[in-house]
Image (cartoon, rainbow, N blue to C red; front, side):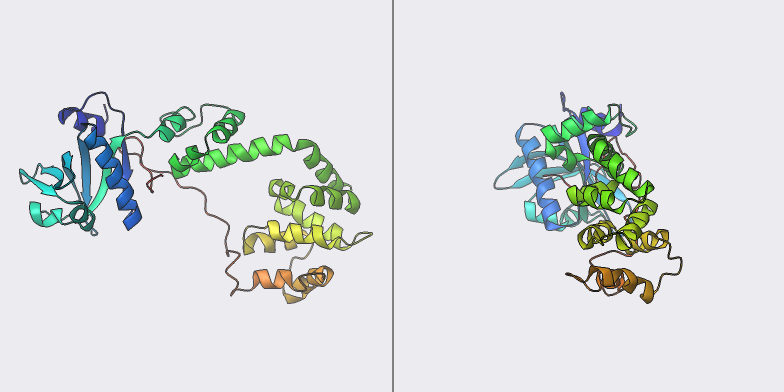
Length: 307
């Protein structure tokens, strides 16, 4: 039995499926946490709370009941005190003064597991590993998009990967045509495939994008729009530079930018140079960082409070 279940059992709560959230230190995050906490209390279920201090250190408390006028009846096991604390006092950390503790911020709230999280648990095992096929993940998300709001960072990375796999499988005939065109240096086939469905580019490697860009630039009929699609498909300045290098330009400089930019004069005479400009914040310098693992305590912890 994990700590949250044990805690709720000691509090006399039965028949619950506890779920612990980190409460974001924002007005919206605190409001959502307190609303969920109030819902459980009104249903007769005690709610374990965790208080935090900015310099570290945690402290356990227990919310026992809710009264519209008085607020929340909260017990502090360390001081042995029980007091009524209003919503505003709870949000502002005023329980610190009432109980004489150093912690001054609501850190965690353990409530009944939301329906969206129950759907997520059908997809993952206890170690955040997918236990179903990518197609089943895609079907679950399509059926209930709110599932995405109840994922940990690690789970979101795995779900995104599964959805990408399903998308690639669905577009396999078009992807095969595009890759074949790149391999055979058939700029017309490459142009047709990219303009037919620009999202195909999300499944290409940097090398494939670079080769396609060079073929379109020097092909029988330069395709401005297809080149723009390739450039805009890059998720970071680093990826764009790598794509240009793969196109056969190992030394990436202003001259290289304009070599391609001049072929895209229809709408963006300096599209690549503008995107790589350090002052342009629309494209990040580095690709999105890999989704880090999340430490689970007691079992499921997420960084934000879901809707």
